[in-house]
Image (cartoon, rainbow, N blue to C red; front, side, top):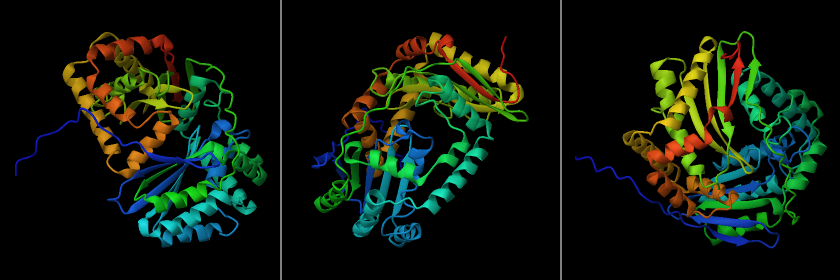
Amino acid sequence: MKQPALRIPADVTLAETVHRTLPNGVTIHALPSDEFKVVRFTFVFRAGSVRQHKPFVATSTAYLLSEGTRKLSAQQIAEQFDFYGSYFDVNVDRDCVYISFCSLSKYFRQTLDVAAELLLHPVFPDEEVAAYREKRKQRLRIERMKVETEAREAFARALFGAEHPYGISSPETAYDDLRREDLLEFYRDYYTAGNCFVVCSGAVGTDVLDAVSAVAGALPATPQTTEPAFPPAHVTHRIEVSHPGAVQSSIRVGRVLFGRNHPDYVGMQVVAMVLGGYFGSRLMQNLREEHGYTYGVLAAMVNLEQAGYLAVATQVACDTTRQALDEIYREIERLRTEPVPEQELEIVRNMMTGEMMRILDGPFGIADVTIENILCGQPNATVGKTLRSIRSITPDDIRRLAAKYLRQEDLVTVVAGDGSIDRE
């Protein structure tokens, strides 16, 4: 059988949501896909760690929602989800909490009943809080024995400052001060209608939309909370974290740039892809294939609600740290001064196009993209605009963007490991 011709889309059209605004202010966004017999509904709360007034309260509140409600114990909640083949997932970042429930269409009502208990009536039992507190403290202590964790936290401090909401990190002993009352207060303040929207995908008919609306409509109708203060970033261009005895150094190189709504964001995504966004990227070819310094290296743009940054991340043997950094800087400088060959850029365009198609292949991926668009204040038509921008970018655009935003004197470098990175 002859292989069909490869088709690379030049554009993509993503349907806008069907949405309704409830009397308490929550907006429900629906993405119906009747060919699927599953339903997913995601409650998004602006309740991330930037809004907490005490360390670890935001994550603890989110993860302990399922540890007991007025009617159900933690074990009963887990058994209900298992019995109906449903799942419950929580993700927390600096800005938001994403609480997703997924079930077969025929078990949607049963799943929603449990979801309503978690969202509206959590009790945060003292014994569950105590167990969680000790478990998370121990896990964080172990994680911070790794150079990768040390570099990641130090990189955030270097980019934004140790007191900035995006740069702050707390000692694991701060878990000792975490109390049930702290979680209840945070829940009352931020798990409210004014801080929430909902996205439903899959087999979302009127009955499903009405049922989810009933739960969302029961959230307290308080106004959106005041945005936390975001001071200007306080950049430290070089940080070394000493880790005696480490076999590898964990490296981070990058800088604060801008979020998704900036006109150069998509272009810088392409720059990051060329630099280190896929297996055949320049940094992979250099650090792994040519020099054997690392198993893997990644470069990417990171979007936050109030900022964005570019980051290069890798781990290398401690005795090759300086050489690896030199090669990272050299590849960045090549992007600033030499045009990317058209053939290489076409590979990158196709890789990014294929990744977009993969993400959009199914109702849940489309829902995830929709959530990001809502948070950025953008319609789903933005996806088509992004693809067109990727397909039309030129080698001169790449060089111009790299020259503008990736000057070496603007870069932040962080290394955690056993040894110095002094290049003098």
